[in-house]
Image (cartoon, rainbow, N blue to C red; front, side, top):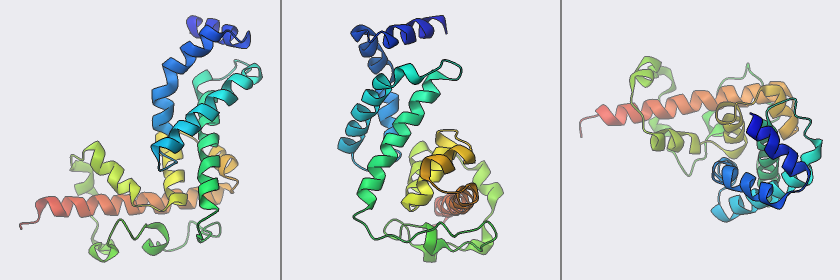
Length: 206
């Protein structure tokens, strides 16, 4: 913590060596984070560059009362979502802002049909205990998450991967907390169903 405080003080003096040290320390993890919200590695590189510029430009706004890494993560995430919205403007997508917690899950609203065949999923027979016992690889988990439509995947990643609360997610995305909770609930249920489908595939005799 003491070394971080010294680094922050150097950054606030616009010390070039401190800026380089910060980049080398966080570039890999922040690029990995950006890839949760943008599709192309080139876009993630742009997010990383723009995000670090914002961090260094606004370093004096950090008041050192909260997590410095958390403060930087918010900047990287906001930059990535800005890039995501820019890409989204050219795509005609449905708005899901009127979804409520009490709605019955409609998989067609949540799933990217190019990635999964919803006819293979029986919603009434999901054995969640089987999912909990299954030994899924990181790749399998990411594949299940990647079947979600972008609006739902973003909330899922912000909540589970970046540990943000619904209040923070709502503020970042410009939605209300109820919408954030609804998207997470629906996304989580579908991911569970997608993982259950993988369980069945593993034990099915060909």
